[in-house]
Each structure stands twice: as C-alpha cells, then as structure tokens.
Image (cartoon, rainbow, N blue to C red; front, side):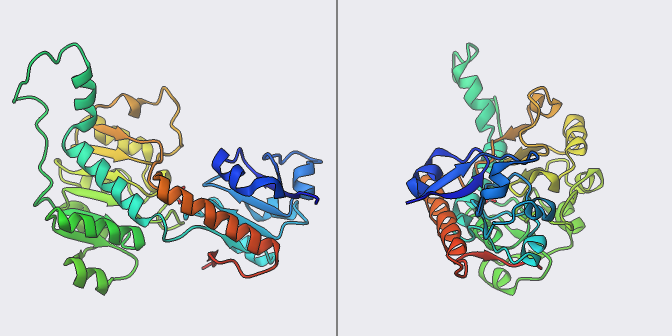
Length: 315
Ligand code: DGY
C-alpha cells in the first residue's frame, strides 16, 4: 500500500511512531521545486513552523493542517479556512498539566527551589543555615490570572486550594469562575497593581502580543512575580530584562520566551531572579500521549474528508 505523504518539521519520535508505516513524512522543505510542498496531502506542526496562505498556495494537495498542541498562533487559520483546509489542534487535554506547571513555576520562584537546588549540590552547603534563601509563603498572596480560559480556570482551582485570593482579567467576565473560585474581575492595570503573582495563561493573538511591556511591568508590586505560561511574545523580552535587572519586580518565571529558545548568551539567562523552563507546560506523559492521539485523529479525519474531531475555527 503506498504511503500517504505528509509534511512535518522534525517531528518528535513518539509522533512518528504513532503515525506508523501508513505515512511518509517529509521534513520541512519550502525551497523552490520542493517535492515535499508539491506532494504532501497533510501538514503536522507543533507550535512551529509558520503556516500561512503563501505557503498553502504552494501546497496544491494539502487537505488538512494538524497541530500537536492547542496554541495555533503560528498558523493563519483564516487563510487555511479560505482555502477550504481545516486546521486541527488539541484543546482540553493539556489544561491540568499546564496549570500544574504554572503552579510549579510560581512555587519554584517563591521558594527559591532552583537556586536552592544549585546551592544544595555545591561546595558551600556544609551545614544547615536557617537564615538562607528565605522565600515567600504563597498562601494568602493574591494571584492575578490573565486569561480565564480552560487553563486559567485550572490555575484558579489550584490557587484556591493554596488559599490565594484570585483576581482575573479576560476579554469577557466569567461568572462561572467568579462563583466557583471567588475570582474577582479586574482591568489589566488594576490586576497588575494588586497581585503578588501575575500568571499569563492567555493565547497569543494580535491583542495579546506585547501585552506586558515596561509600562505594565512597572505597575506591578516591587514584590511581585510574573509567570509566563502563554507564549513568549505576550511579554516584551527586552523590557522584562531591564525591569528584572533593576529589581523593580521581585522575579519572573518563564515557560516560554521570545525568541524561543533564547540565544544561549542572552542576558536574561544571567539573572538570578528568573526561573526558566523549556516550554514544559503540557509535558506530562499522560497529556502528551493524549495530544499525540488527537493530532493523528485530526490528520486522519482531514485526509478522509471528514469533519475534524478537534477543529480550530477562525474568528
Ligand atoms: C500548546 O499546546 O500550545 C502548548 O504550548 C504545547 O505546545
């Protein structure tokens, strides 16, 4: 049986295994005369590379774009839709894992987990000293959640079990979150002013690109911490560096950066008041397995001309 040609950029091994022998996966080749572009009937992405109308116009046989992940800021969904190409993603399955990671970074920053780990392994740790690395107890601290969607709500659930008063900012008020978690709606500026921990859990869109720059960071409490679980470009990297270096806020914890990854000699990486992770929000075995399954299901449905089980609709 001939293999179905699809295109993907260095797809992870577990995904290749799940695709099996049925598919032939071309690497990401957008050069002139690219065989991959000409022959592929499907595209798999995972947070990158960019898929826009210009690219799709060069792929005459493509019937579906399937993203291994929920964020589709790298895909021009409107352009795909206009060409009759459905776009699939993996919503829902990663909310809890991403909220867990939000809390992990929040706690790691508040309680010096990363600096403590380095210290505990180093030559200077020769006796227990109760005066070092004293952090902030999160109970009773206010969390401000930017983006009260599925992931934001899971963060709220966890924060409320840590006895954290919850503020949120969202495009729309969310009465369910207000009822269930006692979350209080704030304008972005007020949320930044009043929160001890600000977590970004919104998608990257034209409205959220550069949402947090110098002005917004300077509204935060000097004791405040910023956690970015959204996408790197939601925060202006150069402004974050300046504000952290000046100590105008206590710290930041980033699961995502702009660019991602940061160049290895980027000055942000030298700061001790920064905790950073390599985009691990959804990286639990259970969640990643579910994401693989949904990605392959969307691909197969699109190729069969069926409605995608998890389709992204353009706004
Ligand atoms: C997502 O699903 O968008 C996460 O960032 C993992 O890629």
